[in-house]
Image (cartoon, rainbow, N blue to C red; front, side, top):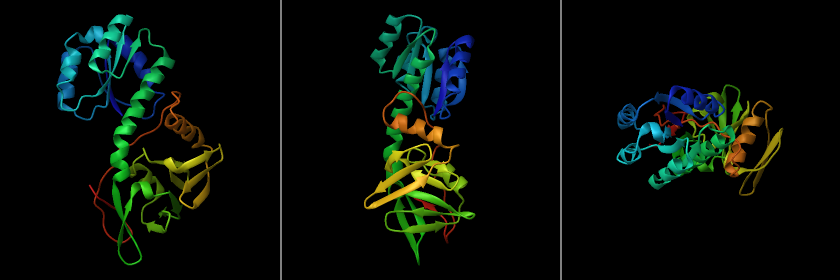
Length: 260
């Protein structure tokens, strides 16, 4: 998630340090005045979240945000509770009272992450790709993929009915497939995290239809996976890593075709 900060330098630095604990957050700008921030937001339509000191931004900022083509979610900051709560009249996502507590910051950011996940999940679940079948291209829905396994320098996509070899390695697939659906759990496996039914530090179980598949979890991926599952369960404790899926055309013969 791309985010900006509209606050003084001292507070901005604190927020930046807090945000380092969230690998899914990407800082794209800090502003000390609302005019510069609005100008930036009017030109850049890929900002998902904004931390806004409502006293610094001024009373016209929130109404102005509502006029943008693609406004970000707003987390308001204020030194006083009444000012922060008044901002809720403009449908802001949350408010934080200064000095900002890290635990409260985490809760607010997790709300933003969960909302962003909800917005993007419908599009990603219904997205489709073509893979090479026995004699023709086969269309698969992302949500029907159970897991992807590394096979030497390439990979194999597993659905309920069949396995499809593709000429891309797991590192490339991890970057291109929507992270709101898939997660790397092992150097050899990427799984559909929505099909995880049980999880430990060393293994997990995937269930889809009649298939029950146990896969190993690499120790280096385990903490990250635990964090994601906590967010999915609605626990305001951790965050997750999210990359944007990319739709690209590819050549035939074992390669992937994304449908825009």
